[in-house]
Image (cartoon, rainbow, N blue to C red; front, side):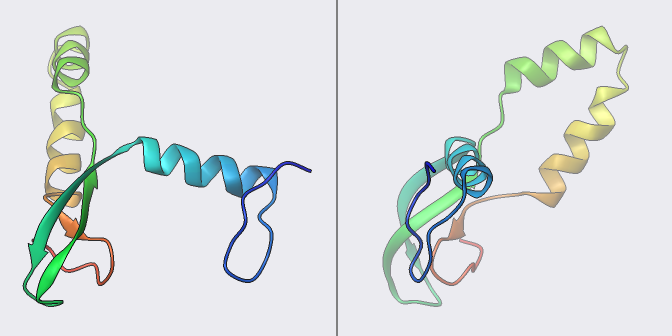
Length: 86
């Protein structure tokens, strides 16, 4: 069985694929976290403006509601260690 190693157990194929897709759908950077008081790996969801704009035009503006919801719900950079918004 193909899988990634977790801290205490081996992940199955579905869990491995889920983690890989989650990592590919994020942008990474190094930023200073005020809660941790050090430079940490910061992550945020990757959003394609071109794809969202195309979907907004194709759906005559209906996709703008989904795009706005995503922007508010998943906004900004977050500390990968503590989850604090940066």
